Length: 111
Image 1 (cartoon, rainbow, N blue to C red):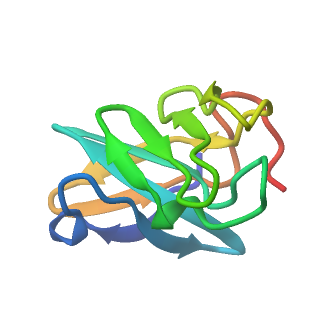
Image 2: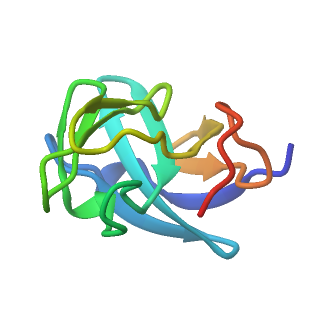
Image 3: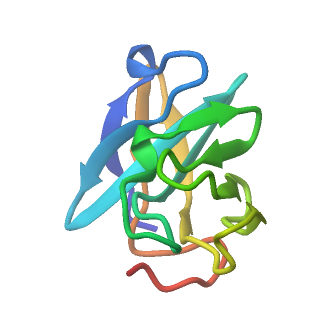
């Protein structure tokens, strides 16, 4: 695995995702308690930034049409999205968050 630094833990705010770029991959990162999740930063329904959406637990809701995605699996949990988004491995080292964008956890090829 090839992890690269994406952000710092202090950048996270409750209920919000943050945008980060690792290599050429745009990411939406979200936090649920002590867990950090990384998904591709593009809604599979409307091709808008998921990082502008709201986070509730392990769910990220797209700001445009309300599609919801499970941050653990990338699978849509609310319409209108029907296709999953890619999810990536995350490693927290001290106060820094690292993501491996060369591997997807769910087998989805990023757009």
